[in-house]
Image 1 (cartoon, one colour):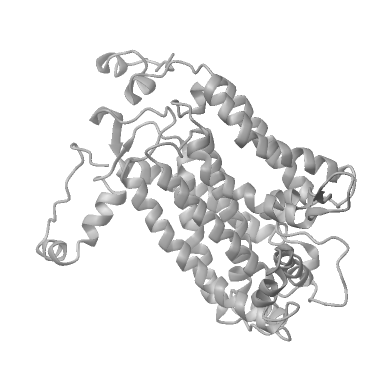
Image 2 (cartoon, rainbow, N blue to C red; image 1 turned 135 degrees about the horizontal axis):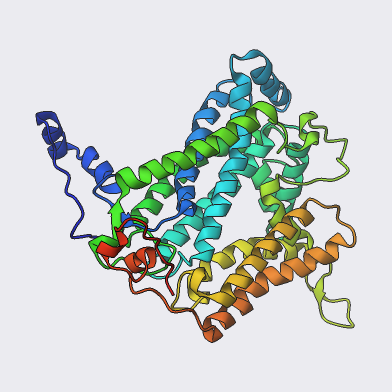
Length: 440
């Protein structure tokens, strides 16, 4: 977005002037994350999580490169190579646990980032492309994380690969051929491990490329904000630096303390115990589950236990397995249509009382699906998975459009400045003892 009041980059030395004329990288950085990029003055700490996601991507790339130097993509030695890295390589334990727990932290901050986007409707015009590119990043993250989970070649690695790639066999006509093409054979083995290793190494750089597009798309309309009101004047904004670089830095420091504590004191807490046992194709684990960040979608997959067919006949139209696969992928694809499903002219959930209630019901539903994804495939967990999955789809396809059409939102402030300072003028707001009042 072009702000007339944005500060222009002014090279101050002969070298920076020479550089600006030939390769204007300092100008690009200044306009992207410096004083040349005005942002709404009322952003809260939920806007920190985009920066945190970028930080954990860097952690994953750096630690992944180091891990790759010591990893052997061969089923005979893959498990041992991980153990060698942890036990014998200098600071190998730090690289291993930073990489493994970094994936979990990456998903945590991305889920919060997406939740903020849902609550404040950051997907609405003119920011649809930002949301769509974010979902592409999320899908690439899921693919990268799944392939990385296979690489340690533990029990859950092997059987997780067997189960997840087996989902493709549910596709009519080409399913089994597609599964064999993905694995390079009839079961996970050397071919699959090499393919997954190469793709797991490549995809983070693809994610980094899409993040550049994501940030580029963000800079066209500018950042959203908690009120959902667009920027109207210079008083509505502050320069990104130093105001939000310091705020992001504080948030990053807090998260880094938590991250360091997990790596140091509970490095295996987020992993499955069975994955510390070397893969054995002849010994099936009692309970096969993916990593925790896949559990909501795994619960949706397992919720379908009955074939779709013609009543009172034995004719099956869609097998239960295929229904589960379609629902699992559909639960993510559905989010791509969110900008057009939510037709409310008001963005912020703070001014949408009915929407706010159902948003928190959706959050509770996702927490329940996460629990159910890790629970045994037996009653009452199967029935609860079916109810929670039904609500998930109903929320986006039925409830959200109805709320958009019927809800009466609260009055919006006239500007971001008014929302921050209340109805007081600038002189009154700067007086000692003045307490800003929330917008009506």
